Figure (tube, rainbow, N blue to C red):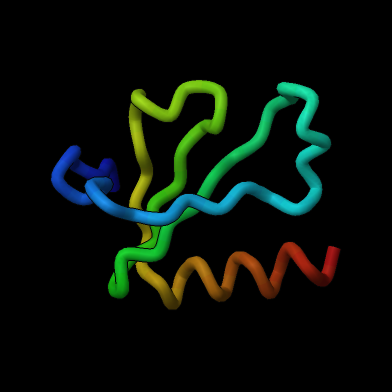
Length: 66
């Protein structure tokens, strides 16, 4: 689901700890309390994706397993 601009006001965005900080590709996430918003760190003003908190937790668990 695509998020709307009203959802991003005042949120704290977190970048992956795997980001080298050298301007490489990375995603940022922000927790809205009910959803997790995802954006491209190189284009933060562009499209956002919104997923449910449960779905995000499932994705993180699966990704951690490799």
